[in-house]
Image 1 (cartoon, rainbow, N blue to C red):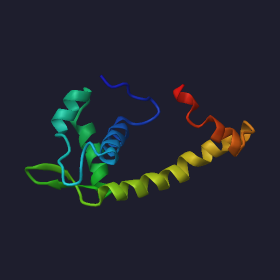
Image 2 (image 1 turned 120 degrees about the vertical axis):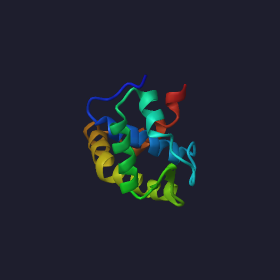
Image 3 (image 1 turned 45 degrees about the vertical axis):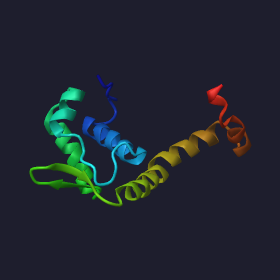
Image 4 (image 1 turned 180 degrees about the horizontal axis):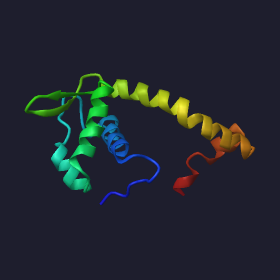
Amino acid sequence: MTQWRDDTPIFIQIRQQMIGMILGGTIGEGDPLPSVRQVATDLSVNPLTVTKAYQSLVDLEIVEKRRGLGMFVLAGAREKLRTYERQKFLEEDWPVIKERIASLGLSLDDLLKREGKGDE
């Protein structure tokens, strides 16, 4: 069973899982998304929650609904998602990270020295 974060609506967490699968290549362009019912059952959530997550992907214009067939990833979706996620990172995540780096007095050298050290 999935552990849901309390700070983010479940439909957004499901959307992010689908985005991760598309960006990671698990779901390719032209491929169908898993059915709403299947995802709802697998994640023990209401099908309306999954439908809302999928609709948000339609709103981003990376998925299309094919009547009677399901939801399919559109051509160009990966690149569109990369652009969207990069912009979102720069606007939302990076300012927080940058502020944290500054408050800790870390330099670029400090950060680069640590790169790869977490694997040891």
